[in-house]
Picture 1 (cartoon, protein in one colour):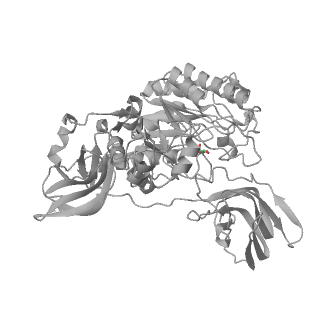
Picture 2 (cartoon, protein in one colour):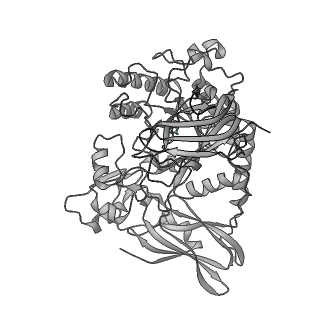
Picture 3 (cartoon, protein in one colour):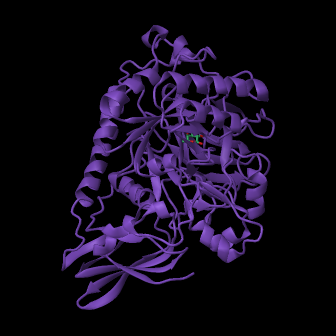
Length: 589
Ligand code: FUL
């Protein structure tokens, strides 16, 4: 199965003209015959291809998420569904601005959170009163989805919709048949009344916990509704067209296969088969030979990297967009790793994309334009540090291992090496002046159709400040600073005299096997005996998928010599607090 192939840059253009003996193709999924041995399985894996919707989707590269809703007005990431619709009141909602800004930055599709976990609907649905209909915005006559549809038509942008299956407002959530009917009714409204929808996002999140409501979703009915009403749309995440990459940090895998035995969660047997294979959406290996050898079935299920331009998914006054350097890294590790980037740009509480995000997007776009414009392929004696590789996906995804060789002062030298290529693979290496380039395929699943597409000299942007809380850390040293483990772990800080505190930051330990603090409460005291509870939202929504530093700013600053943060509930099997998890915040200077 291993083969060595040398393709010079000039050979690239002949890619699609290649004729093959092994013309067998399987579209979207395949089941191995019982007799298949591991060699046959790998051959068949190389013959699995995307269906037409997936193929169109994989060409998109840059797509944008718009997280907007009740959380935009409450400073939360996960609303609890008890919010009054009257809180939704943007004073200058301008979907033209959203779409224009994103179009100018090179994005080809936007996906709006029509309903997030709090259940608040951004369109005047007939299914619930928990919607824009009962908000003061445009006297209850507004419709964000309709506005966005018009703007997308005006600027030639594709539209996708996120409809959260988990609904913390719907009274029937947990009463499975009734809620499934409600969900289908909502989906039907969205997919009937708003023109062509290109992607539908069913998020898998559910924070109900062991004592929460248990809803059994009728995924296949949801999918059938979508296929009937929008046959060209792809179904993402729990759907079987587009796969969640497995993190919310903007990182595709170095080895990123579109061909995987991972069973999409839309199928009832997903947990048992994935469990037997020992994999889930976050696993490091989703497509190796040894994994395929154990599988009965394979899916073409390409990866989507969803990540926010800011620390949170929703807009928060105290958060700011990531640096251009960070966005450039995200681009290289998503688009450059066989994935589509879904970058979230959350509109603010006026209903506009904030100016600092607009500037950041323009800078990001300029960085791509400037650095990926002058293709140096075929120019002798040129300094480069980047190659863009590609596989012709009409033949599936086959390359398992490659070397990029450069002719440097008369000798062929290995510039870089990698594993998968897929739709696009961007490889950076130390700058070097080359007279020629060559791609050596070390291993592939059948005849490969890969080539060096472009070559560049890329300059990474300068670093800028990233996570700015706006509040400085308390500078005084505590007399005592302790943690107590156990059922309800806690952090305690004791100071010599009372300090003014504006909040705190909890920094989860990402590399630990253990879980994260999820629900918490905060107490202060001046004598260590009489404690007062500080009002806080008490929940780090979405911490499991996105374990970034969590900032809690108190409604009013407090004065105290003792402060205690108690973890009421954590994610994962265990939670091991350490004193440096918590940074207390002082007033702005
Ligand atoms: C997650 C959700 O819980 C987040 O709030 C966000 O919507 C993200 C895209 O998906 O699972």
